[in-house]
Image (tube, rainbow, N blue to C red; front, side, top):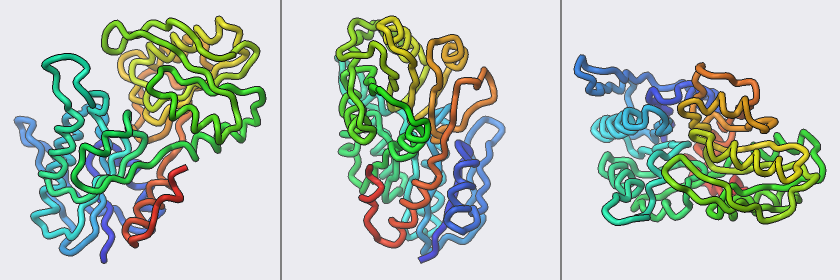
Length: 310
């Protein structure tokens, strides 16, 4: 079966890296706009009977990225592609995964339905905001983790007396798994969120005094919560505070907040392309292209990818 790597406009650099590691050319695709802003797609290469992988994180502008993905998938379906896998390193709308109050949508489920309606037959994603989002799909979902990439980076630093910090109760499972692989202790921050993108640190559960702390989260958006957590940990006597997250959304003045904070380094991946605005002095970007390319090859060859679930 012919393997085709296709990219929207959301992260062309990552798509090129994946194609290079797989030893294939990035398929020629024209993704443009009509004068009124409507998305126009043309798949230039022949994809009939092909195993197609569309690299498209749902990064800013989220709605544009989502619509590009859906329209590309529809074009592939109508061009008789045999399989269409959406490679979505960052799954947008994942924070809207439940009814936390009356009369609100479950948008993460709505997006899952849109994927299937567009003709997508499989989803390959990474570090979902909540693991149960996999259950929103009626098509197979392969859920990867950036843990191997982040672990490798911090292991090279040869840190000692380390504590892995979960910035909220929802991230405890992620932090515990990371702490286990890192052979480190665990701390949890009890925070109360007064409104979206705003949180107040209330209490730190665990010992951080005289420790090197690594705050672990799935994404960093405005960095308001992250910097508050870092400052609270530092005030409790931590020697150094690092932060790590898979998805660096970094909206608004997040980069400036990171620069001005007590965080030594923020380590993120290239699941979302880094913009050129704002300071990057404290931000380290690691590539997830090797993991994604390995997963794509295994899926294409009908092999297990469980070895990548570290």
